[in-house]
Amino acid sequence: MGIGLVIIGAGGRVGRRILALAIESDQFEIGAAIERLGHPDMGKDAGLAAGSKPIDVVLTHTYPTGAADVAIDFSQPEAFEETIDYCLKNGVALVSGTTGLSDAQRAQMKTASGKIPVLYATNMSVGMNVLFWLVGKVASALGPDYDIEIVEQHHRFKKDAPSGSALTLAENICTSAGLDFPEALTHGRSGKDALRQKGTIGMHAVRAGDITGVHSVIFGTPGETVTLNHTASNRDTFARGALRAAEWLVGKEPGLYSMADVLGRQG
Image 1 (cartoon, rainbow, N blue to C red):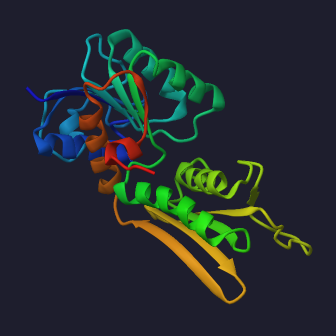
Image 2: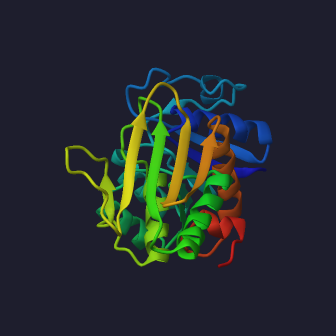
């Protein structure tokens, strides 16, 4: 028997890849594939809808009545409360990559982590999580004489801006640089008097075509520029990271975890 897995947002761009790669790995047993009511693939075999083999599990908007080992949530914030409720009632570990959560939803997640293991990450890519760690180290090493700008690029259909990953980058930089988050952020610039202000971080969101995800952090001072960049060429990097996190989370004590815990990163 593989790891019992429920996927929320299974009909989305990342959700389909999580489902297909989970089937391919033979490490998971798909217990349910959940998607919003009205999705065009509703009622179809979830494996076939994901471009894989049939698994005798249909894409549905109804949460299962039974337990599973772990749930992976890559849906929209609107589904968050129902997902948390299902996991709490059934003792299911939760891996969430849903961005755009409200402060109240984040608080709800923290409360739930007192009863079940919860892993939350704005980006499940292993490489991106290394970048999350690096930007704080670089900001601390370079010091306040370096201006900091963050540019994130995504496809035209992404709803939230700036991306959750860009906000995580900014938050880690603020922590290391002693800046207030999110007060230090300047979202874009316009006008005839738009000089950057010392102690701020510029934040810029690009939405175009089918860009999977590009995040650049620019550190600049007169005489030199240091740029850290992460480019996702396809969504498999997020899906593989989510599955890695799910395997790691099963059997853990209740608590709120991150991808840094999965990667065993210290300091």
